[in-house]
Length: 97
Image: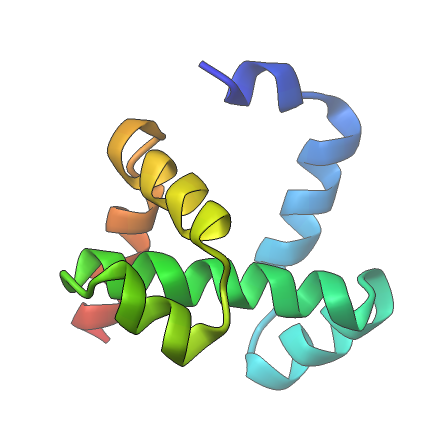
């Protein structure tokens, strides 16, 4: 499992910091401080691609609507199919709210 390679005290602290954010505005401000605009846009794009794949959209539709390359779409699809199933968890939780 890839996630084991990531584990460490520094990353634990970082993720706990993210979990301490209380609302959307705090998320915007925090990620603006931590990431470049391109990094934020890349993460957002991958999340949009995952959502659209989850909804059964085709590569062509996803590419047209998000501007993501087919390579990016393929990587996200691989995460959906063989990853830790966390996109599913997040999508389910978002649906419940």
